[in-house]
Structure formats: structure tokens, C-alpha cells
Length: 267
Image (cartoon, rainbow, N blue to C red; front, side, top):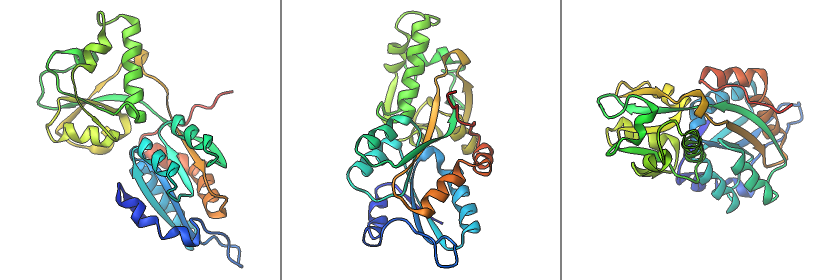
């Protein structure tokens, strides 16, 4: 399994265009070839394990992973970057590439929730309401990034409840010092002591295991649905089999080990 991150991803995978991104079955019925997966940064650890497990089960397949913010990946795909699968932290990005006729099939993948990552030594924040404290150094994912949209939706929900005084969301957003391209970049600002707090996914904070950062819960009534989806972009047997694996009971167990919840499927 090869992991490709950030801007180098396009250079690393461009060679796949000539031969096709995906693989098929060989004469003996085994899968072969390369499966290129564009996946949200918050899925990095879980998908690294999924890819390793899949390659062990299908030795003829190489899974190539490109991790970045879902919005960045969406842009890359719309600009023609070759990929077999897209695992997004939001249905919005999948809908955008579906509108460009790039999606053959899509499925719910997992769910997550928001938490506050607070700098351990900061005395400016101990509860969700403290996000509005004047002078607090807050970092969010950018508004076009799923984590950034979810965070702003949670703030708007709290604002509508009126639990923390007038214009709560505006007062919180006035504290934003930077808007990052991914949720992990936002978390890194807190880890480095460059921010007092960030709103991140629970899975990312748990994976960090960093004594410099502590968790502050966001009350349940202000949580918004965080839905991950996976989309098949190329009609490849290997890619379709990987999507089947990621959304199987075995795949769900891997995601659960990394803190993800099962997807909420409408009935």
C-alpha cells in the first residue's frame, strides 16, 4: 500500500492515466492492478489499515491512497485527477462530483461527531460556551471544508437555541485566527500551541494522543450529523471490491477501531 499526500498526489498518480487507474481480474480469478483512493484527511489512519488488510487478502492489488481535505480532493477530481474511489467526509463533495457525471455508485460509509480540541495549558476555555470568550485563539477548518461547515452549523444551532446569549455564533467566529484546509491541519495548530482551541472530529483528537491537547465536549443538542460517503468513480472490479470491503462488516470493524460510528442510513 502506498500513501500519497497533499499537492504531490497529482504527480505521483499521473502515470496511472496511461494504463488506467483500476485493475481487473486475472485468468485465475484473482484481483490485480492498482486501486487509487482519494480519501478525507480524517480517514487517514482507518484507510491505511483498510488498505493493508485488503492488500493482504488480494496480493495482486496495490492500494494507492491520497489524503487531503475533502474539498481539495473534490477540486482535484473535477479538474481531471485520476482516481477509482472517493471517500468524503461529507455528502456535499460527493454530490458535486456526481453532478459532473463522475460517480457510478455511492454508499454511506461512517459517521463522526465534533469535539473541541483545547490547548492543555490554556485557561481561556473549559466549556463549549467559552468559544465566545474575547481574545480566544480559535482555529476552524475553512468554510468549504466539511469539518468547517459542520462546525459552523453547530454554532448556528447553538445560536438559534439562545443558550449562550445573543449573537453567540458571530462572537465565536470573531475569534477565528485561521481557516485550515483540513481538520487535521486545524488540530495541528492547537498541538503546536498556535491556538487555544479548534473544533475537530472526535476521531482525529483520539488519534492524536497528544498530551498538549485536551478534549472538551460539544453538548449533544448542538451536534450536527457528520456523514462520510464513499463513491465509485471507475468501473473496475478491484475498485468495486475495495468499496465492498470498506462498507462490509469487516470494514466497519476497522472504522470502529478508529472511533468512527456506523453510518446513519435513512429508512
